[in-house]
Amino acid sequence: MSNLVIILVSLGIFFNFAGCVGLIRFPDIYNRLQASTKCVTMGTILILVAVMVHFGWNSITLKAFFCILFILLTAPTAAHAISRGSHRAGFPLWKGSVVDRYQEDFPQNKKE
Image (cartoon, rainbow, N blue to C red; front, side):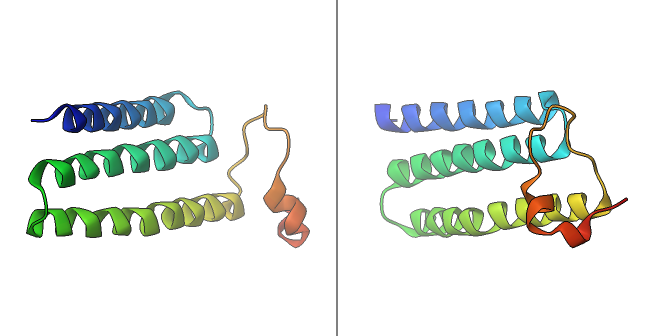
């Protein structure tokens, strides 16, 4: 196994671990989505790039490439849908949150 593969897998594991820690430690659903979506997406993509580097150009590389595209398209979309649904369902922001941009853009959705 090459040094590049080891570095990529190590970075991928680090990002996945950081996303898991953020999922546990952050105070509300919106911050948790931020941590899990960005970190875990980056970590998984780095691990898949390591797979591509390790196996060279063959069917495994093609599958890893399509997995990367799928993750890049679905993870942010799913996180956005979950956060918007949570906001509309009335899940409160953390008390330390400074601003609610969604509420500013769509004041008709305000729950009173």
